[in-house]
Image (cartoon, rainbow, N blue to C red; front, side, top):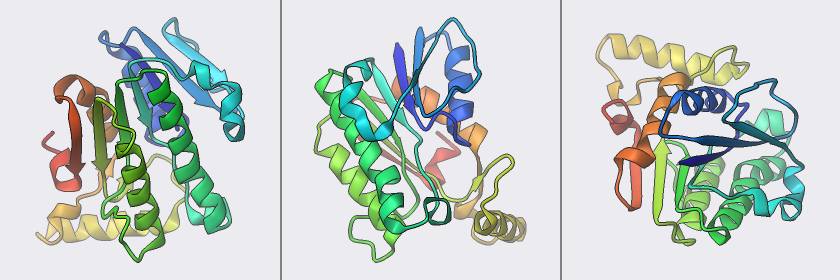
Length: 212
């Protein structure tokens, strides 16, 4: 299979790239990034792109499965408008290009609580993205909805606090369904999903990811 990735340099994406390169079922791995990652591998093709100009490289969004791990925080984005551009507009544009180019499978890293009807901006944005991609009718559409993520060298203070608090509560038997998920483990689940799951739309909720 030929895998395509957006968000390849993020906390989950970098592990996803490594695991795809190690997996013999994936003969080629193609990433779309803003700047070179420094990774050199015979299976890897890295496209340095301007995400705001997808029309200039949309023909390169061609393969068997597209993985979307792209996302940012409101703090890093600077505004809700900029966060929407990164978390919604870019994945949506890639999804359209992939569907037009005959990509059969789309694997999306969404978020726990994602819903287009949510009153919470982040959850609503993720839910609307899920719905938008669903309307494109990929042969296989897999949505992962993780909760708090354990990221290496994370600068997300709020997330760090949440992970520590939930870990403490888990230890005394509280909020076990919100168990923090290491990005390396999430990446391994993403790699296996297109191979293990059937056609159609499949949502893997937080509580199901660990046993998947």
